[in-house]
Length: 267
Image (cartoon, rainbow, N blue to C red; front, side):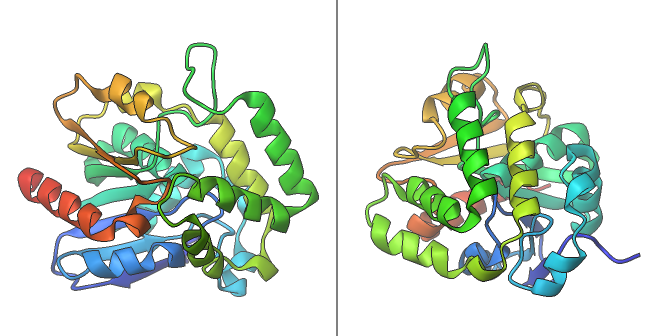
């Protein structure tokens, strides 16, 4: 059976494995330079979320409806991941990876999240997320005008960066604006709105590293500091003068933090 998840492998398969899951609307090419840096020491497998790709054949074959159910997506990602891998997820990819690490911990050596929090959307007992009204307005704009809405989202991602103009240009160059899959975009947003992994985050029993930019306008650093501060197997790293893309803004520092983390917890 063919995998339903598009992947790309880098590095020596004999090295410890890292499985990387990208964020909403972001193809794996956004993370590829960072993956290349990690592949000097690790076997890195990059994964796209369903329907998000620079390869139109993958966009066409994606069944984005059921694929954005979290449990169906979990099984597909596990099927695509190397055995005994460290799962690394960015933004929505980090939330998904946390869900997998908590519920299927036998498949995950450890968890690394980048610019992720347990809930992206504000809830009755969770004040750190985006308001539901604002989120629903964005979903409506994506349905009506996917390309300009995605460009606005890139602008939000880069707010707080030291060089937001060039960072936004770098992100935009990796995104297939001419072949966007609106169904995949809306499916990913539906998952992002409904996904609340606070319980899973609190039950994590694998070593976990959470990297976040201090200036991130999409993920509140206080959410991590309050939520994981008393859990000894979870470590938070807050990067100063950094927005929603630490692996692009401070790639060498992120690589070093990840190497130190895996070295300290690798059995």
